[in-house]
Image (cartoon, rainbow, N blue to C red; front, side, top):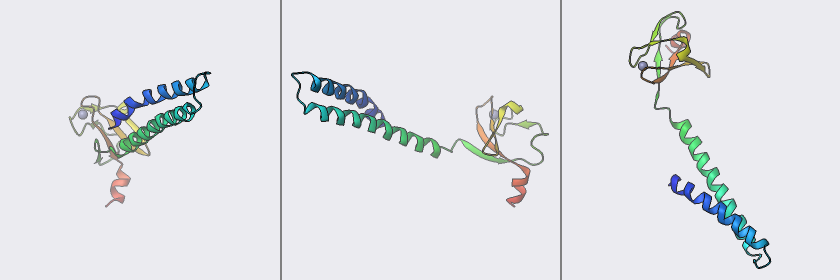
Length: 123
Ligand SMILES: [Zn+2]
């Protein structure tokens, strides 16, 4: 559905410009002007609509992120990947919205580390 809409957009923009250009020529009809404007507006409307749906889709897509509880100080422990057991370096851990996010370079799994304090508060 989305890909079909995206294919239509260049045609809408192209013919919209063509209609506007045609309306401005001596032989052109003024009625082509609103047709061209509507066509271009429709093209940009589809771009906006598809972008909005893609943003909604990417925020919903949390299935690849797992939350794992670590005991003890995360900074001092040697952390190994919960998925493949590979040793992780501090470069593999990024702080996103106050939670450390692990990006395993071996199996490319991403997951959040729950800090010790958060672990006890949740009990
Ligand atoms: Zn891994």
